[in-house]
Length: 273
Ligand code: CTP
Ligand code: MG
Image (spheres, rainbow, N blue to C red):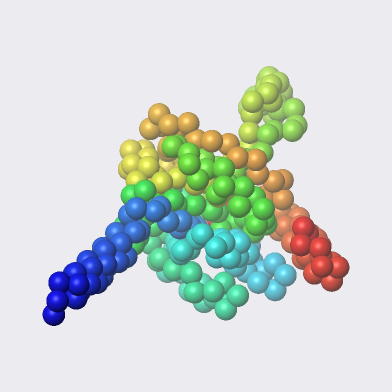
């Protein structure tokens, strides 16, 4: 083999090695996106025995609707669903329309924060420190593709991460223990937190490691305690959390309306619906 042949062979071997190393380390070079959906609650305020994530909405469990937009997003690699260890209903959620991204984890804890924390620990071998983790309540079935896109887009280069939220529109009252007004709270600068909440995997782990499982009701609260300032990204009123039975009726109306608009959009060829 002449010099040219040797050089060609050397280049081929080098290129193969380069491709191999790139494949091996690319998850660590380019942050990936994952979602984690805590779905291990009992729905005590909703009542009725069955945990609210398994109540049906348009023929599908609430949890299915909460997973739909996350599973459909092109950037999100996998959607981890944290379930109670004795959950026996998750199979009712499985559906081809969710694609192959759903990964159930039977490691729910006593509180929402404990369920999220357990889920984060369970996926540590699959996720790198800089990867993004979008935590979304199983009880929010009406997340729109547009709001999800906005969250991902606005936070892609953010140091702290952030969350969907909406500015408070109503006047707020603080009550005394007799349910009488003790004070009027100015709504200026007040936002109502929603989910998804999007943070780097290592930030979320550090935040939830540092505070106890009962200390926070959302991830942003834990991240704030680290001294970071999560960004508020404009959410939507439709992204409500189902807490009481009335909320389910409202969620059904919202989804019906969204489906009708989509169908109308498809019929007229209007992609903006
Ligand atoms: N969650 C969880 N593990 C818990 C408690 C809550 O994974 N131990 C999840 C719920 O399944 C829900 C989300 O966290 O998707 C938000 O919690 P919430 O709306 O409070 O639901 P529940 O705790 O089920 O309801 P309740 O507080 O009325 O009992
Ligand atoms: Mg709860």
